[in-house]
Image (cartoon, rainbow, N blue to C red):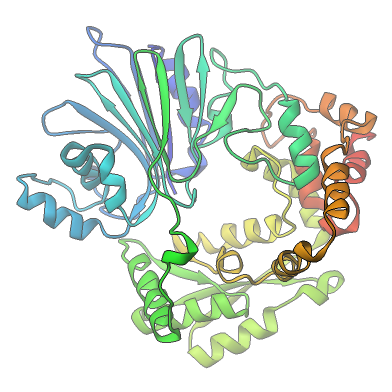
Length: 454
């Protein structure tokens, strides 16, 4: 995980330094700031690097192309970068590093925005064209890597986290009330909106080009229509999963796994253990109060079967409460997920052993592992059987549902500006309620009320 930031149309090194250091936690290994020459258009690009490939200074960012025309700052990993590098060498490109950043830069030089279709990976990319005065921003197909942007008096600012944009000289933290209503209803804020007024997120599978003060956002990838998808056998699926794990094990730093004892993380651990000697896994173990959610026994059994080391991290409810301000600082926006603190504690502990962690996050979305996916199928089957009048009544009731209650307005007013983790006041009550209790306990507005009145 790295962090990127930048401003187009402004030359203020202090702002660039503040932006980059706001995300120092994303890249503890290196910091870089590039300012365009005084006789060129004002541009600031910054980077915080977590070194995974090529730990030498050759991987420093922002990175300039050989001819000095392009400058890149980049967060992510291109898993097929070695294949792409071989193709680019045949096209005449030469490389001085062993990492993927230089490959991404050369690929853009060679193919332009079309290079995105060749990338197999997760990424947030920013490339400045010094000659054409053009900025290229891009985000991976699934939106694994975040990328936010805002327009400030004709200047475009972007960063890996919202806090990079809420700095003196750029944006102030103001509530986006429309997005707040969306969050209260659905427990997330869909792209391109954020809970901060004037700050947007680049959608997954999109790229943006800024030129002459205008930003054009385009989509570069669509999932294949259902009728065009070939049937996938169990054997083919196994090959794909094995290949995905293999690609992610390419690293110049230690790699480990997060093991919950479930199907997804167990499969990943099994495949990784075949290729890595001395694989270490980390598991969350809850105290007595949360014993019914504890999967550590299953994880221990799986680790013993795979003959890998398993280390446990104990999480207690009272510790989670103390960590809320810190979690809010890192999250920026509400995330209605009760596993935020356990995942945070797991990551903190594992960092002492390895830098790269493989986990089963996202598998339930891919393979319909949650119960409400079954309900969605049921809705598709039963919905057409209901009379049109009934369906119209349900749609109208949902459309007319007003979440702008007095409680929501009070919660909105209670949102202070972004503050450091040491503060006793959280940045956003919505974030507190999103990680404090299981969503099914009460409705969103009720959970807001609990914290808004304090």
